[in-house]
Length: 378
Ligand SMILES: *[C@@H]1O[C@H](CO)[C@@H](O)[C@H](O)[C@H]1NC(C)=O
Ligand SMILES: *[C@@H]1O[C@H](CO)[C@@H](O)[C@H](O)[C@H]1NC(C)=O
Ligand SMILES: *[C@@H]1O[C@H](CO)[C@@H](O)[C@H](O)[C@H]1NC(C)=O
Ligand SMILES: *[C@@H]1O[C@H](CO)[C@@H](O)[C@H](O)[C@H]1NC(C)=O
Image (cartoon, rainbow, N blue to C red; front, side, top):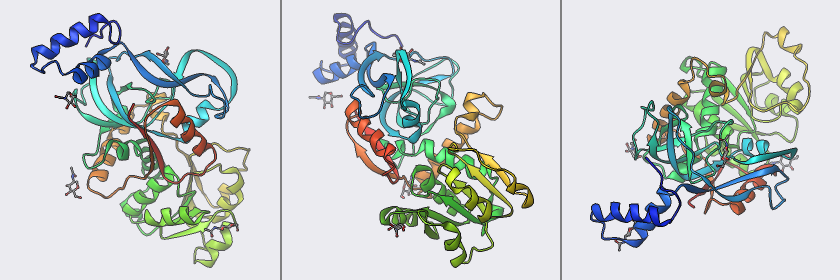
């Protein structure tokens, strides 16, 4: 597809009017304007040049930038809804670097395929999709995003774009943690999984997936509403992580420890608890950077396995099994459609612009969220 020289330029309007009249669309003005915008060379986006505190007006700004060009393995997606994750705030966090070209965040979303590269074969133009993102590239906080097609899955039909946009990043992370890193299968049903911080995006997806696998799930949260949220996603019991977890485990019959622990939080303050709460031969999965050095020595006595999960590893290192990313999105899409997995969307803001994105980043930085926050429309 070739883009016209400029939005609403005489040339592009001429092209559009011709297309419209050729296809008998009665010169409908709003249709023509919409098409002119879509085919225009530029798009709206939210990005930044400087890494600033979110309270700074320039931390995220409204931009008009070029529509990205699709590479051979990519699809170009018209973005309908995006969700915001801690990774967005971590990348944007203040540092003394100035970008010469704007950086556009967003590693989660849903939309429609509008163009594809010559080697892209998983989707057709017009397909409704949901997707994660690539840390090395511009993301979904824009009207269009170009992504390797393995980062894309079929949008669950039964979900709105907003409900769908809430799910890819967290659910792929949770799925990889449980299946690929901890190696949990259906044969492990009735084993116990402790999820530290179970009311966030990854926690609430992991709780649902673990219940699907038949595990006993122990969540942790600290507020009445986050406890209720975790129970709603199927956790068997929720402990209060602002107080020592060990006595709570003991008092509820888990004194001999748990088989698996998924740590959706800085592991540093929890380290001693993790070392004590894990059963002999148990497995611990970390998904958040540790804020300090931890002592690995206690692992050996109980033959404990420590694994890590980073959703972008397969993509960043171009691993042989990177297609698994797409497969997981497809599995998750089916589970969301048949109701075995529920969207964890809790808040939607409209439209996608710098003001709303700043608000969303603030909510994430203040850690006062449960479930997922989504922005939709331009
Ligand atoms: C014009 O086109 C737009 C976009 O396709 C559509 O929503 C609208 O109903 C159309 N209006 C008329 C009068 O046909
Ligand atoms: C991101 O988008 C901006 C604006 O179009 C562009 O200048 C920049 O090169 C893009 N960055 C990457 C990594 O593609
Ligand atoms: C968790 O414990 C803290 C500190 O003791 C307390 O303030 C809070 O109300 C507790 N949360 C719940 C849901 O009981
Ligand atoms: C959508 O949900 C309905 C009712 O829950 C279900 O019968 C249907 O099979 C679902 N659609 C898909 C594509 O799974």
